[in-house]
Image (cartoon, rainbow, N blue to C red; front, side):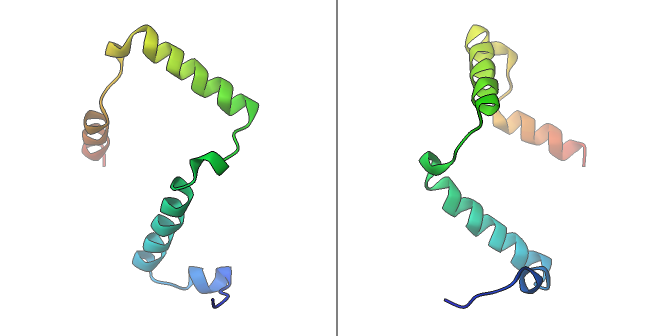
Length: 73
């Protein structure tokens, strides 16, 4: 495998860098058990889950959230 520097990556066209970021993110998502969360992150996730379980109707599906975000662009 060829070693590349950060400078090499930054010199890539934006589209290439985005593909690289996506590939890296996908490789991380394949092994979620290797991600270490801080105690504060665990606490926040537990708080959010409890809030959702208390009243799931207060949340929006991803499709709605995405549509709102795209309208604000």
